[in-house]
Length: 453
Image (cartoon, rainbow, N blue to C red; front, side, top):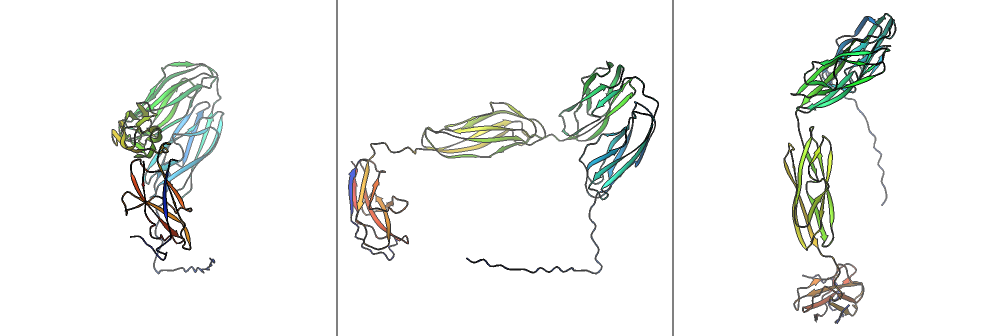
């Protein structure tokens, strides 16, 4: 039903048809009163807290020959009820070094870790030192004191300087190998003979060096320490470098933890919608692929289905390391009008699915302008005599008397309109309604019929 409203039923519209070819702000002040409520017999509830302890609070290195190294182990343990993070350390004392631990270091309640304190005097005499461990435990600072005594006089000899003195591998997936290069340099003044490089730590191996070997003063060599965990769990140990140098035995602390292997393929977005794309043109969208697991993920192939859809960007087989991403580009170039649906399929060795398909949709449309030979119906009418008229709505039907379809999205301001959406050989019926300032339409004008040649 049409709403004729208060507008006059007779508008005086006569439709002709011809053919051609072309506030105030309010402020409120609130007084806030704080009242302390005391409950008799209540006591503060205990909060979980971390507490760090060491098995040795004082270390003594007595009579260490100048140019040699003595190493002692220290065990650090969280004896509290909450996790603790050791943020760093402060080391004081000539000739003292620590190895086997890196910061920040997190320890859960009850967890312990071992590290090493080394004393390598370069001159004779007594030395005092200390190590302060800084953390968020109840006692913010934990101190280990030590003293040492260097004896003798350095003689011209080879000296094996090994770097780094610790190799923490962290978490490594079971069955996956991680490695680090260690350097041995002769910082002494005569030839150094490296007798052996060994380790007994489970899952660790050494390669890249053949012993015995000789290093001239200032020369260096390298070897590789690899960690290949066979099962889940933490492993600690050391790699020992033995030589004829004044520091005849140097230990490199090694540690690592095996964890369950996973290969997770994350795909974003999970579906691709091109919407409407004009025939004869094209549009592209991208799909991001990321390995969110902890092991290498092998993508063996990518394929796409759907008329007018193509994919590019990866070129077949790709291996993604943990955390690595790759991009796949999808193109939609419709050749005809109509909806298209398809999908991109990624084949891999991912734990969460060896074949993942991303649905792809799009619609081919034709938005080209009508050809010059298109028919046009020119309409004109007399203005309404009613007051408050802001324009006119134009309607068209295919049968006399309606129903009619509105041709305009907003009222026409003038008294003429050209309809270029007609087809040769068809007959059309037109009416016009005046529109008032409040949006009310008048009754229809008289009907005009047009037969398009």
